[in-house]
Amino acid sequence: MAEDLLSGKVALITGASSGIGAAAAKVFTGEGARVVLAARREDRLAALVEELRAQGAEASYVVADVTDGEQAARAVQFAVDTYGRLDAAFNNAGVGGDRTPMHLMTDDVYDTLMDTNVRSVWNCMRHEIAAMLAGGGGTIVNNSSVAGLVAIPTAAPYTASKHAVVGFTRAAADEYAQQGIRVNAVAPGTTRSEITADWFGRNPGLEDMVNSMTPQGRTAEPEEIAAAAAWLLSDRCPFLTGTVMPVDGGFVNQ
Image 1 (cartoon, rainbow, N blue to C red):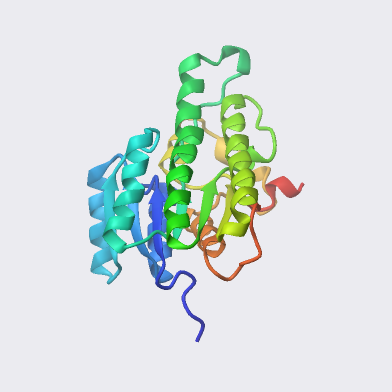
Image 2 (tube, rainbow, N blue to C red):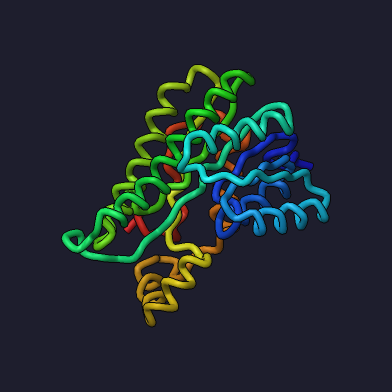
């Protein structure tokens, strides 16, 4: 019988209170990982950790806004202090945003997207890499988007932010390839979450339109994105680094 993908690994998940992050907590522990969940909403984190522990998983949480460098450092240190090391990290914290023509975008929209989608990854990676170097290596997966691979009309700052995540991923993969650290990214297509539910709810017919642009003709479930991240974080793909994996039902393949 094959060993679980993440058996014995200590994994940090950011943006873990909902959506893909919460799904990752369940998928990773199901694959044998001990997890530290980081997000801003303590009530959600506490409930999720309680659920995981009730199922026999080893899970802890730390309240952190990883757009702040000190809080990102604290989250990484909490993982090391709690479990003795950090083997894997899924930098998932991010935000979407409404579709608006570029010339009508405001500075606050740009700033929020760049802080949440880019600065958070920058903050986390610096401290995760330092911990992994001290521990002899590790794996990192960043959550980008299909918008990190192709242009999404009327979403210029979001598209730019997700391209930046791809840039960080490739740069770090190259820089630390000979130091035992692999860095990859997932690029999800439209994925079911509270954010997309709200988005679709405010825009009747939008889900059908988006699905019609996807060869598989549907919206992804968050567990499908989490499963791809788990594989990238595992030892099953030791020669894979600097890769951005579309998990998009074929969207960017058209």
